[in-house]
Amino acid sequence: MYLRSLVLTHFKNYYAETAYLAPGYNLITGLNGAGKTNLLDAIHYICLTKSFFQSQDQLLLYPGENFFRLEAIIEKNGQEEEVICKIQPGQRKDISINRQVYDRLTDHIGRFPLIMLSPDDIEVIKAYSDSRRRILDSTLCQTDPAYLYYLIIYQKALGQRNAYLRALANPSLADAFLLQSYKEQLHSAGQIIYEKRKLFTDDLAPVVKQIYHDLAGNEEVAAIAYNSQIQHCALLDLLDYNENSDIIMRRTSVGIHRDDWDFIVNDNAVKKMGSQGQQKTFLLALKLSLHQYIYQKRGILPFLLLDDIFDKLDKHRTAHLMDVVKTLGYPQIFITDTGVHELNQIFPGYSEKLNHIYIEKGKIIK
Image (tube, rainbow, N blue to C red):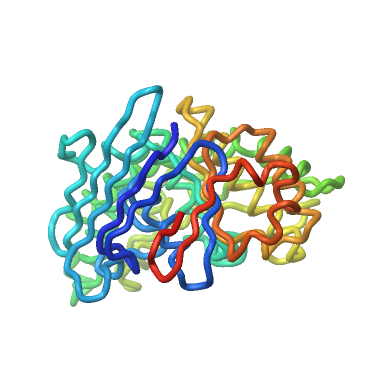
């Protein structure tokens, strides 16, 4: 699978531009603010029907415009596939594959799997649990349609229950029948999600351990652990036990929406005890492990997007990263950087084989 071309119309700082890509390494350079990251975000949108950085499509528009359009030609298993996204904020997303508009956008998720690594991803290590759940959910949604189905059910029931609790003026007048309905929906979907997340973590843990070892080049041992409130108690029982306090607090305090991952190096939590080098290395190991997991489950090597990461790594880790990337055999990689002066160090003996794209103020210059 590789992305051959991408047409951007009114997307972020691109008015109307076309990028031609190639198998292997695609290096995207330019000054800060030129639009390098925006090009990667367009690829992310084409594959996953949403931006990596923004939750609102309104924020993706070229200044003064009221729509954007993305067109991609992707070669997959020897066949060309055309993806078109026509987005006008406030209206239904119009996304098509080979001129056939999707009835459900969820049918597109996983068709063209993708893993992206950005400097902002360090928050996956440092920040609250929701950032770790997002990366967990994103990977499972690309590999397991049933997971996406139950996640949508759970999130809808959770949103409805929370909205009802917030609107409840008098706790004594709570509708027991309605609350029971919400609890049953959360329980049935939540238990399935929990089992899938647990199996996912069990599969991922040895891969993270190995890739971290390869990247670090030392004897440090990395591990991940999945923590959930329902590890030892059924979600329905937890919801029953906490119902009165939920009514008072006006929110759902228990459930798989509170789950978390623990990231560990040498028995210490990376979030609290890890050095900056350990945190960066763990993040790289996690992202590359997710890439391998998707390949194992789907039989497709995902696109790998590396956004401005080389100036955040020392030469030691950069060398180990490229060794791992070459060993894993990625068919297409997109890399942004501010210049090409260190290419011979990053890609020794390989820089002449790069597909180099230069961007200047939203203009793609080959």
